[in-house]
Image 1: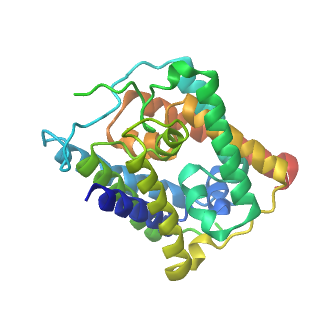
Image 2: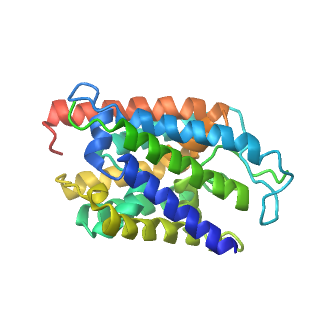
Length: 151
Length: 143
């Protein structure tokens, strides 16, 4: 059951990325390149995604535990530290250079394009290198922002 | 304005929110792709199956798109291999150092009104804009 739900979530996530335009790198750079022929579409992606999540998040967290058991594992940190700011800045530079972030790059692997494969491999190397160099951050959770605190 | 698609982007965005909520509702997790994918590279018992399944779902979703909505993944990437490699490295290192990317901070973090995400998102938006403008203006779109 858990496997099916995670698989479905991955598929819906990929469809969302595809329909919204995030899997087309030129659309992403068209949004980030504010000095060019600006395409504001991605602001609508953010709006649709965050509003949906904002409303649903409140509803879901009224539950004591996730449907499939266990506990909600949510980032709990609120401190603004240097790795957060420097890391986000580096991430943005890479994102703006070619228009790919992790989700869309993985979804676009199906194209089999050399550039997508190179990007995903380099991204994996970068992630792994960071883990190795900074083991103290190995405790960091998923994409969110903080140390895992079970309940 | 080259290809403004507010309706598709809003619908696609809502789907991203729904997928993130499914992960939260069923598995109690944040849908951050960099964290989920990065966690796969760092094997830990009990942490691999759900991550791998989600990533396989992403790849399968790509396949569905290529069959049902091929224009979503029809693009040309004409950047040089070293430029793409540099971008991938920056995205990989940066997302792990900054504890998140466009999904974890951008969708879930903002949706949860997380203080750290409210800082991270403007930071990567601004640095992303700097990079994209620089590529266009300084290098004529060719890197």
